[in-house]
Image (tube, rainbow, N blue to C red):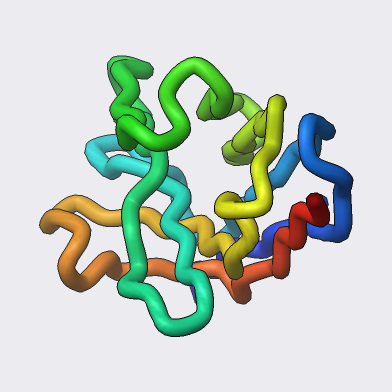
Length: 119
């Protein structure tokens, strides 16, 4: 059974930092893309960052570029999202996900920790 287990969410003041981690088990993610999606109340889910598991190439949404950094550790089968200069508008549930068929329907999802940024 494949599992993505996240950790690291919480409450932080604006301007602060948080690091989310995603521990994967049950398979390796070669040929997959791992990403972080977020969903705020009343808003659509959005992909904020993604990383190709094999090449390490990355994607960032414009709203987080320069503030968020996605990485993966292939040896330990983990991914992470370092978030700095957090803003109240970054408040959302953040999901780790992995896919090899695009982001409309990723195959694997984490549980989605809450990130709350207070002003």
